[in-house]
Image (cartoon, rainbow, N blue to C red; front, top):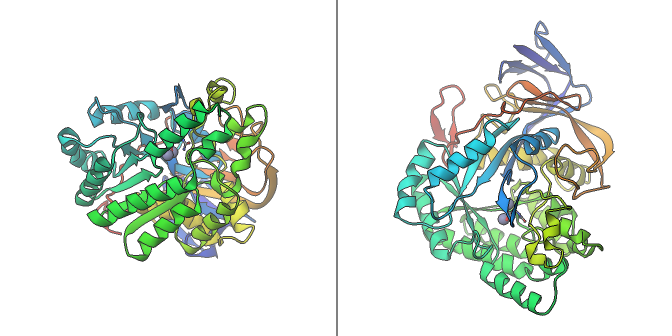
Length: 472
Ligand code: URP
Ligand code: ZN
Ligand code: ZN
């Protein structure tokens, strides 16, 4: 099947130019002016940008958490992602200490394989390091193609790992070629502060934020960065929400320590006051780390602009307001943490970032796609527009003005975290490996069409022609 996209403006992390794109089956095979139109389908992208499909490096689909399971699974979650211009998600595979890691990986494959409408991969949670875990890791990296691990420094008695586990995970990652991701908040201090608040009768959603101050995120970020320096390893800090954490990442980077940082749309545009909304509505805005005072937003934007933070994840982790968030109506610690962001990740970054002059168009592509592809072993198959790359493409109309709403989103969850927000720009059509998933704003994909992606090791890329792994 041959398709040609004409009249569009191609935008990559480094270039913006007008050219046609020839797609043969699942790959981009030629980019140039006035390409032959004797093909099966000519797609006119006049007035639109063509972006590489977005890569969302941080999702929780069909995940048990907080006494319930996230509302959006691999089908509805990846549909929402596709409508938002994302063509690859990397989801967190939870593990438990009692079981071999391979069982958890199988569980995640079972959740996703018949449901995903776009391509996907997994990061693997490490809750504890022992001899069995160390024995499994080489196979997981080399055969399963799962080349990133997640260590939680928070959620005491649930996911939280101790510093010894983080240290040994960093050591193993250095040796085996993986990237260690951390949720950086001091879980022990949070545990103390939340129990104290409840003893004092403080039960409303706002206490979620007040018991997890930014200093606690900064402290954990600095600790993780120090352990990374000590092990000469590599670290990716997820969902950075505040100045305190940005400063620790910047300090480590300035010393040459291999530390990367991701923020999320919610921290860029929402603030702590949302947790004070009446009638328990503040529960819709309960994330960990929590929303911060407004001044942190400008720090995050500046950090994206100057490269102290490099990526944007959605941290998609949706729970219905009715029946799920409401588990915490009398106790903020029982509100399931997380929200629906996957569909709006790119639109918000474009509208609030590019349109408002905070980042350039090419930085937008780097932050939403290319950098994640490079960090997580997918480049240049994913994350760019180049001959040989997968034809994962977004035809994006930068002039459309629209209002975000749960009435029009494509997720299963019953609310939008950005209800009523006006944005500029919208993906019109989205292709995954050469096939439309969304065509003229209509879903034309199919559950199960998404493929699991085995990823290259940290610092490597896969040559698209020979499949040989070479240094990035
Ligand atoms: O509140 C959040 N972030 N929920 C998802 C789980 C996590 O910590 O990433
Ligand atoms: Zn987290
Ligand atoms: Zn998360």
